[in-house]
Image 1 (tube, rainbow, N blue to C red):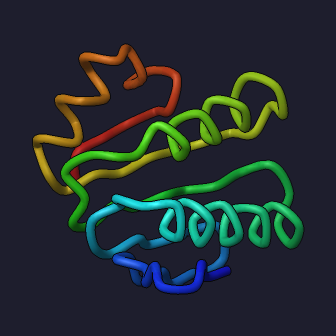
Image 2: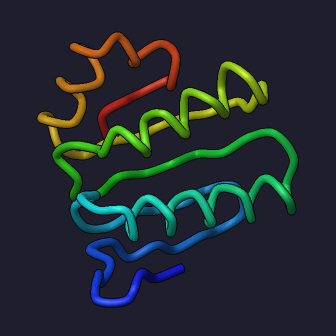
Length: 105
């Protein structure tokens, strides 16, 4: 879902339960694309999602809040893989490494 005048910064590819997110996650359009992709995977494949952030150095609060809801309220098994150490450090600072099952790839 796009917001007029606000182009996405991310490119998302999905394979089974894996969702690869390329680019920086910086605006509401990016959040909506990630949310839509996750909900599609959950609708097709149950209660497990593996998010792979290939380029992101941070995440918006809306993405973090959405992922927290998935894990804590909806009981979704989430695995997050990150390639940038800045994003991993952010997850450590926020205390999300164990909650989101974060690993460096």
